[in-house]
Length: 353
Image (cartoon, rainbow, N blue to C red; front, side, top):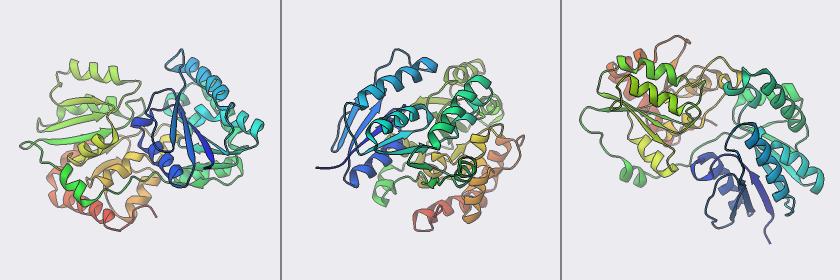
């Protein structure tokens, strides 16, 4: 009989490529996996999905109800391992381990108390910082996604934190050839995938997009706390045909659309520690899709880009993204150089060993 592992997430499994890869790996290793999430998903081989319905969809009420309900749902089944993703599920692991004495893995995908949505709210930040202190120091295994976050956590909590980078699955050439299509005319699609939240520079990007020539279309894939604000900004500036919102899409569709883009954007704010030390999934997704990207010269991105150059780096906070895009279009040799390097990564020059 396979060993059992319970995974706790607050994201939607169907749209979370990173969690899909983690759970698939668990199944491949012989575990039977139960995923506790606020969203519905269909059961599949070796994976049971359990929906945790809450009265609230966001905010303090959501986190409180999710953790309480998920804990009581989890304790009726003994598992060999409990895997909690980020601080918003960590308390369940903390108390579950006390009852069953099982192994607890804590996934530190973010420096939660330093996220832009939290860092400027002193009371909220203190709550999450206390959660980090109690849970990171007591879990059996802690993992994170970037070398600099690994160093920060190890220094702060004086314990081993394992580095597990969020690498996408490699697509076969046959799949790429099927998915690849030409964009219409001279249109250049610039894609952003991920949360539409504050601290991503999206407000400034849309505000300056009116300076872009009409041949450029900005495609935003994702939802978040400022989705409505961004849509209002686009409407007020009469740019509906130049900035497109696609919401959340399934991973296969997102891979397809990303491969057909001309350029990817990985934008973050440098005003919070979490962003500065991040290593976003989309960085690798753009490499996987073999398109160049623009990203900030934060430590983890700069380090990887030194190994093999796949991105144009924003070196200063006030450096114009618009100017950098236009420079990349003008310098065709540079663009093709970055693009060829992403191809090399797919052919065995490993970007993130």
